[in-house]
Structures are given as structure tokens and as C-alpha cells.
Length: 351
Length: 115
Image 1 (cartoon, chains in turn brown, cyan):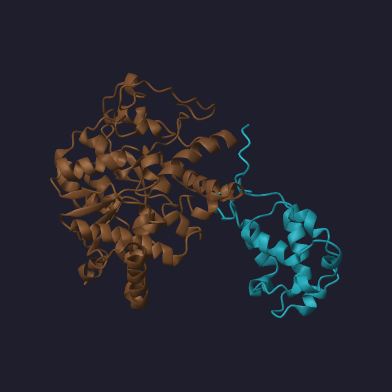
Image 2: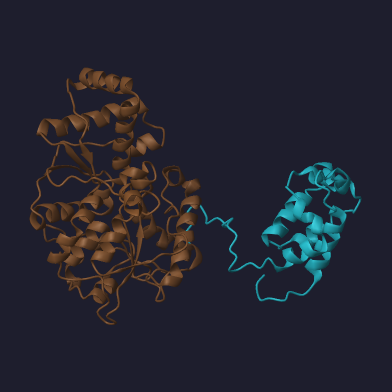
């Protein structure tokens, strides 16, 4: 009986042949994450994943801020599906949680209201003479890494263990709202027991921190940050989470949403400036990683190629704990070998 | 400090690790009829002091119930103890007794280290 109920919390994730949709904001916030994911899928796991240079926005941010009307979003999403259909793929993997939520929502609406699907087909054909099939499977990249977490664990050089103490690292995991809160059955473990990141952490040797505000919003919330005067709501939400996790002394935070990773990281600087408060003992803040960065580090990828230097809270102390080597001189080298100017150091959050 | 153009907001959550409800429970012992309050607000609607000041007896006893005591003693001084609130209360809460007991409890020294 228990197994029958637990089956409802599982998610069907395709085994192979994925069509990858890059994210608008992730390539700016976490420039190494998507490349690292493709490298893992292709080189480590030998999967067929297609990275299409022709792709474009899903309208997610515009849609959720009422700038882009629903009909436009549907047509733009349909165009993305038409590109996938043209390439002969059926399994869509959107890099961004918002895109994942938008695609899931549009497909759901088309299933519930077939007339909207017909209207979208007509709109797309009129606009660009294209036709499309609805994806057979929509999975987030974190779903794929979760699915293959044990295979990846076999290839990893490091584990989520503090090499000085031998104890598992304390890891805070944070799931994006648009991953499992919009359509709970589309997430691993649904909205009640999201296991997608916790499963990775446990499989790779870490300890998942279960703190009171674990499921609280990160503070991203489109309307909370787009207008400057509203950003107090955003930073206050983040502060609530950071205060709640602080007593558990997390070694780092990992998230599968671009907004969560961004704001849990950057607001630590803002709170430090506003209140002279940091949420670790030494004043360096709690590093925030994407799940690709976490997996990439354990697989032995270069931290600077993963883009860790782009984060607000710097990760050298975490790398030392795990025992990952890095070259400080290479930290601000560009891909072309040019040494970039090091960023300014904030007064209250140590770097 | 850097001017961000926005500020942190005070949380509205009730943190029972930092707040003691000891004084609220004492109030319930002294005025048991307060247990029947369902916060309709008739007490505030009929309040004479409310017509001339921003005093709200409903807000005061709601704050007391949550263990948020800051500023309540000063607020309660605005009450003239006319008793109209007691007359209109549909649940029969003895509000005059409630107000007098809140004043007395707020004047008592605290037993625990919590606020």
C-alpha cells in the first residue's frame, strides 16, 4: 500500500535523446553551468542531447510580469516545440526552471482546452509557416542528473565530505517554485517531498539540512524584484531563510532555479551592507551553487571554468574543505587567456 | 552605508523561541471570558476613544494574544474604561476586566528571560 502511494511521487524521465533549451538568464548568472551539464550528459553519460543555437526566449519573465500576453507566450512556446520537432526529438530539457514551468503550463492548458491548441497552431502557421508536436517528455536538467546520480557518482573524484573532519558536508537544498509548486506531479517527490536535489546530495556523500524555513520562497518572486521599491520584500524573504538555516552551519546551498541561486547569493552581500550581518562564523557568507556546479566540482572540472568566480560569495573555503585543487592566478583569466580586472571587494562580506 | 532604494522589512511571523506567551496565559486565568473572543471587532467599532484617537482595543488584545507587548501599556492608557465594548460584545467577553488585567500584567515584572 505504502509503495502504491509513493509511486505517485515518482516522475517519468526519458532515458535518452534530449532536446536542450538554454536559458536567457542562466548564461549570465552562471556562465559555466549549462556547458558543464552538456559535458556531463555527452562525455560522462554518453547521451544524445541536442544544443540548438536557433532557440530563443520562452517569454517566461515577460509572461509572469504581465508584459507578454498569453496568446503570444503560447505561440512562442509553439515555435520552440516546432524547432524540436524539426530536429526529430521528442524529449524537451529546458535549462531554466521558469521555462520548465511555462512549457508545463502551456501543455496543460492545451490538454484542458483543445481549442487553445488549435488557435496556437493557427497562430504559429500564420506567423512563420511552422508546425509542431507537443513533447512526449518534459524534464528539467536537475531531473536528468538526479536520474543518473549513481552513474555519475561512480565517475566522481570527490565526495561531499569535509576532508579535515571526515564528516559529510551540511548542504542546504532549495527547489525552485516553478519546478514542483505549479504542477506538483511534474517534480520528483512532488511539492511535499521534493527529492531531486536531496537525492543528489545523499548519493554523493553529503548531509541534507532540514531547517524550519526549508520550503520558504527564496525571495526571487518576479514582482518582488523587478521594481526597485519592492525589493525589500525580496531581500526580507531571503533573510528569513538565511536566519533559519544559520544555526545548522551549512557548508553551502544548492538550488535548481536560476532566481533562487542568484538571490540567495547576491542578497547576502546586500544584507551584509544593510545590517553588517553574515550567516557563517567567519564573515565570508554561505556559498551558493547550481546543481551543475556541484556535480561538476565533484567530477573534477576546473572551478574557474565552472564560473564559480562569478558568484558573490566566493567558494575557495568550500573547495579547500572538499579538497578540490584550484589555481588562484587563473581565477580571473578569460577563455582567451586575457587576465580580467578583479572585482572590488565589499566592506562587510569578506572575499 | 550604500543607499539601495529599498529596505529590509520586519517579519510578521511569531517566533515562539523568542516570545513567551506566559503573560497571555495569565490573562486567560484572570479573565476566562477572553477565551470566547472571535475577534469580530465590535469592541473597537463602538469605542469612544477610537473616535478621537487611533486606539484600537481589538488590535491591543490581538497583539497581547501573540505575545507582542511592545507599546501596549502606553496604548492601554487611552482607554477611559467606559465599558461600551463590554455591552456590545456578542460573545460576552468582560472587556473592562480584560483591559484592567492587561494593564496590571504589563506592569508586573517578567518571570522568564524571554520578552
